[in-house]
Image (cartoon, rainbow, N blue to C red; front, top):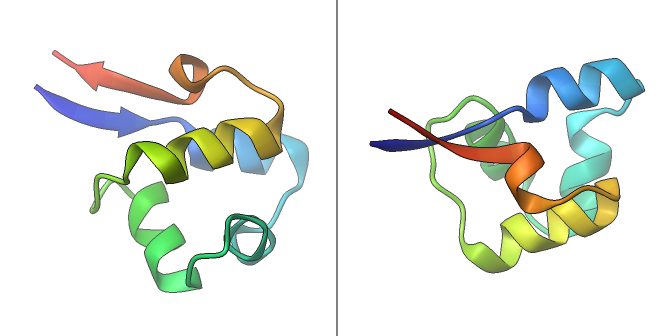
Length: 66
């Protein structure tokens, strides 16, 4: 099983730029891009920060692909 996310769809639907979210979470744009494109499994700390900033539950953003 792999951890996947819905970040691209969430950001697109809200008109939020990846660079803005990266700045809010205090990570590089490249790292944020890799997370969004499912090329990097983020730490729990970063995932929780993303969920908090977006005002969402973590499991509404990240999920296990079966």
